[in-house]
Length: 151
Length: 151
Image (tube, rainbow over all chains, first blue to last red; front, top):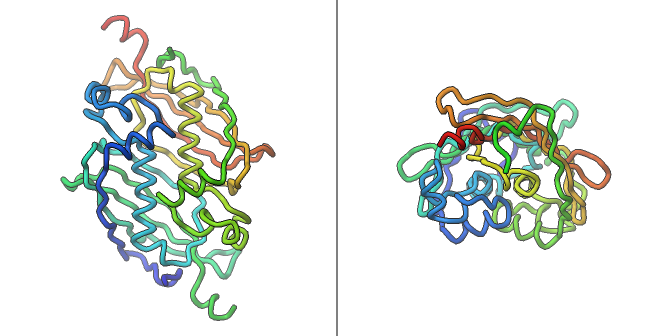
């Protein structure tokens, strides 16, 4: 179990690879982002994305799952107040094999809640060619290990 | 059909309301964000969110769909390079009725692509009590109407 104290700056958590399946991309797009380039191969080829491509929100949601599987799911996470930025840098195409990592940028104790610390991460998702497809930074709140002991 | 020229600063697009269903929230969380407060009522009540709550990514993806239905789906959108920021300000609980709007903050022609203009939006999602639950800013690329005419 990972607590606030375990997230020292520079620590890196690598993601388990995830393959992008056409059916999943279309299902997500139908529900949340029904634009032609996310729904149809021909429309994708005719767009600036160059093929059937995942909604940026789909890629971002998969990035969340990668974080859960890499470290958040086994941590004292209390959730996140939001995303500092999210850049969708390259199209994510059907068949792409995504991987990547979260890197601890900084960590600090909460001023208002002594049992909580706040950790800032840089998150990068790459495709099988090593190209960054989505880059983001966000903060996550974690319970402190020593607060747990005292409770 | 809305083109770049239609997005003048100050123009506002209101979202059609969307009700948050427990089953949808749990299905999204199982796939992308399997944390206890997004999966289970009791775990949600025991968390700082106060009840079974939607993954922030689910709320954000629904916001994308609200933008599509309000204006993007009937526009010359060429997609977005990313999100400037996304703040998850309040928990989104089962049964909440979400609405909100996108407001045009600024618009400018692309320097490198004369057929394209870039529009910056502020997007706010509110619950049934008028409280902002998610606030974001993002830029979207649109084809210009006059480029279309000349093509």
